[in-house]
Image (cartoon, rainbow, N blue to C red; front, side, top):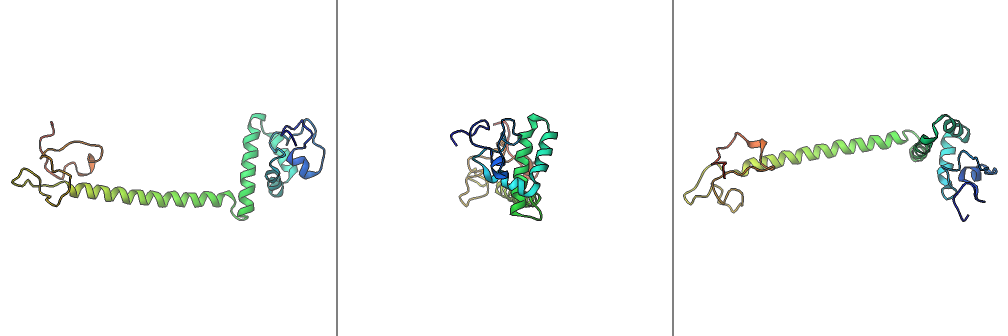
Length: 165
């Protein structure tokens, strides 16, 4: 097993599994190297060697590697989850994306509320705006500075100073 080539002395994983001689023109050799015997074993268990052979003969040569990788992924998913296979994995990932999207939306809403509530509306005698509690927002002057963080959400809710600075 010095080389993974199908033309070496070592048969491909498919021929080894099926206990047959690996010929130089073996259809499986480029896609099932001898170093990955479990890949073919899974595909064979789920789809059968004959069906895989038929499928690879019908697929264009430049698409065969993608087809084998898809079969191997589906076979592994079917072994892990015989009922749903990769559809189960996709469903889990879709639910996770939806949950994370809701979490992101809630966080963005909190950020907008925080930003809108931090912009003071009155000016005190010292020239500083209303919030005397030590917040750094709006303490340097009475002017509004446009930023990507404070643009649309509170645009018309609060009076602002001269925007020209």
